[in-house]
Image (tube, rainbow, N blue to C red):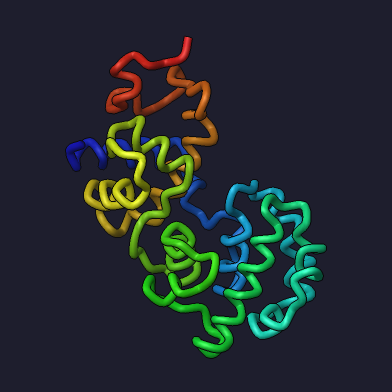
Length: 217
């Protein structure tokens, strides 16, 4: 896709979802440690569900040092309502231990260092870097971003690493963090996985899915 077309799409989505580029509530107004933990917990779980466990979790474990020493069973009791809570409890404890032992209690500020933390892949690292440290190192590709990148025509693969590179090539660095939030907002509100509302979409002019007539009847 041409960069001028990508720029038009970005502008159209920003106009439709002007609040999407504000920090999502689950990672807003919190220190990097909270952003890291909440992002790990948010995988395959709604933001609303994560927000319900945020207060009790950090009331008991407000620092990496305290969470690093937690018993997994105790953490599981707090986050039990979340999907995959066994693995998530194990990961946030292990990540806190690594932050404490290897980084002096500070959440890393580079992609390479973040990827050494248990439970952290590029998607999580990109979110933490942007929302906790204000750094655009890449684009977080979740299920919404992957679906829209394929439908709109930014990428022709199902490989999230390649999709990220395709999106990074299409948009300027300063837009990478906000692009994730805009695509997620559009995926939730309009470009649904099963029944996309193309009649309400502001970017059909440049959408491959729409042009090819694959709109659900």
